[in-house]
Each structure stands twice: as structure tokens, then as C-alpha cells.
Image (cartoon, rainbow, N blue to C red; front, side, top):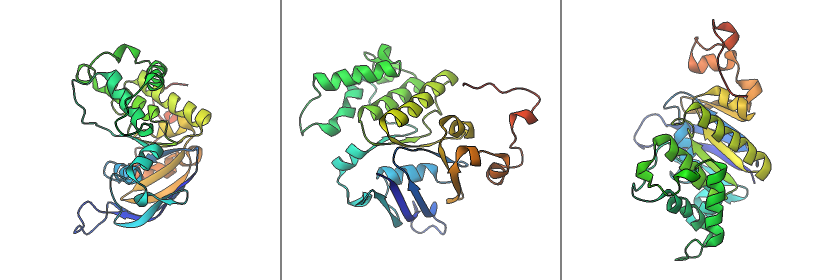
Length: 257
């Protein structure tokens, strides 16, 4: 099902003169990869929190298919949306294996514990993200980048049709950025998941062949395929006159293919 926002506006302080987001109208297609781009403070994180149901709109509505997001029960929302924040408040002495098993609770009955099938899913997901060596470590014993991959793994274990990620590669080295982006591209194709993520790197949108939402000063200033929007003339109004392509530089930039 598609995700539609209609005249969506939000303020953290209702007395503030200017909203953080103002009249956001989006129609996000089922099974698409969507990248939110814009400067710090433009509203990317806020939009993701609204889509996750963590904040309530000041005005407007968010619809998932025919359902009003604000009227969905928490359990139904947990079966529909998985959310990966930039930073997570986790308990340091919880083993990674146990933490990942929490991702299965949206399908379990009240007081039911993860069983063999759920733990096999944990193992399989850890193997896919190359973190099996972390399973028996506590969360407090792993690096920030490793924790970010664990959070993404937990979101995948939820097996929701929609995955929301707030700057999922910000704490990752170059190799693991490629691992995560490649995985997101694959699961979108193979499992028809709808993926919405924010990033500061426009090249990520090109790599993912994503639909791009350009946000500036709390409004959507442009939207469309990455190949059409990740261009100098489209990005200069947001990022400034120093935006260029690699052929304009005195060196060749390194990337992944």
C-alpha cells in the first residue's frame, strides 16, 4: 500500500512562529526506495518521526492505504512500520542476540517468548549483515557503527512492509555503508518493501536508484527520480554554489560500484 501525506505540518513548540514542516504533500509508492535530502534542520528527521507515529501532526494527515496512521493501534503500527533512529538509547548489558529477538515481538502474543523459528530468523539476519560474531557480545561492548548495523538488523527482523531509517549510514565506515545500502536495494526488489531514509550524501540516492524528496526550510521543494534531481542545478539552491560533479575536480573521487 502507498503512504500519502496531505497538508502535513508540524511544530515542536506550538507557539513558534514558523513550523518545522509546512504543508508536506507526498505520495510514496509501495515497494519504492525514497531518499530524503536537505540541510541539517530542514525537517528530514521530523518527517520520519511523523511517519513512524512518534510525533503527531499539527495539521494534516498521514494515510497508509485507506488507514489513517493516527488511528492505527500501536501493535498494528509495529507490524507495518519499522524505525531505525540515528541514535538509540539501549541497555548496555543486553546481549546482541537478545536485543535482535525483540524485533520478533510484533508477531507474538502477549507474554509469549521468541521460539525456535524466531531465533532462526535472528541468526539468518545476523549472517546476512555479517554480524554473527557480535551475537554473544553485550550492546555496550560493540562500536557505534556496529550498533547501527544491529539496529538495522532488528528492523529487518520485524518483517514490516515499510522501513524508516534516519541517516542509517552516518556512523558507518565506507565498507559498511556499501553493505547497508546494497542490502536495502536488494530487499526492496526481492521483498517489495517500501523504504524511506534520510542521508546527507546525494550519491546514496543515485546508488539506490531512489525517488528523491528535496526538503528545504521545512517544505518539499522538489521530488522525482534520483537521475533527474541529483544534478548541480537542482542542488545548488539548497547546498550552495560549491556543489559540483567529479569531472570538475582536480582528482577522481572513490566510490563503490
